[in-house]
Amino acid sequence: TPLLSGLFEAEVDGPLGGTAPHVGLLWALETTAWSDQHFGRSVDILAGLAEIDPGGRTSTRPAAGLASIFNPWHPDNPVDVSRRLKILDALRKRHPDVAWVLMLTMLPVAHGVHFPTHEPTFQPWKPDKITVTFGEYSQVITKVVARLVEDAGADVTRWVKLVEHMSNLNTVDRELVVSMLRQRVAAGDFTADGRSKLWESLRSVTSRHREYSGIEWALPAEELDKIDQLQSLVQPSSAAERHAWLFQDYTPRIAGHSVSQDFAAYEQ
Image (tube, rainbow, N blue to C red; front, side):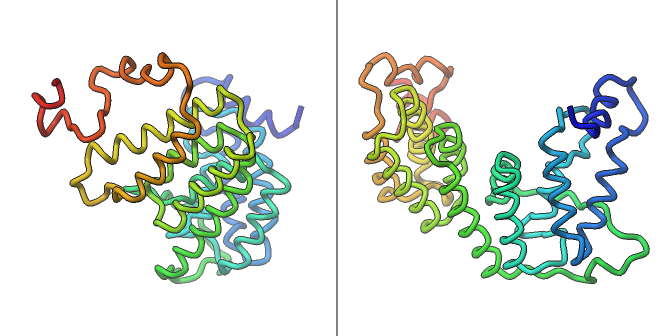
């Protein structure tokens, strides 16, 4: 039982109100992460705390601090991209589960929000300005996707998460996810239950984009066709499994028909 887990337990068991005892420690580590000298050690300790964090009422959590520090479009740290990725690789070895969740937070989202970390008051560690170019941002995302694909391995739960994030990736990164997942499927890395979960996840993506095919963010038909090919490889043999999604929502997504645009056609 880690000694520092008591900091989080005090929040879980304590009365409402007041500051949770772990907050000061996290603020200190977020502050030292602004130091070029202390950056690696600071994020390593934060990752260790994230492993023992049971969650709680306070929004200040070690995993959230890591997400802000490694945010690719608004990084709260002074180190360059190359070193940041090397330290991320160290976290993948030392804290694999925490690193996996962290890398997912680094992927693009439609409306991203950044929560600043605690800043140094007296030390001149924080740069006056941190600029992230489009090229640098794209480079980080591509390298993170490659690491996620590698670390997903034969874990169905991880692949389902990747598929859920796939729509926000660029074409090249999305193709990497699809092609590597296809290789895993061809190698027989997943059980029948796992293939069924993958099929449902892929079906959800294609049906959503086909429902809104006229919208700018919708994937092009040729990309959806490639996902369809992968989807056919993991399709359940049971008709009940293949059609269960029709009964899990009052208005399930049906490819080519939008309930909001043409209700009569959708009902038909």
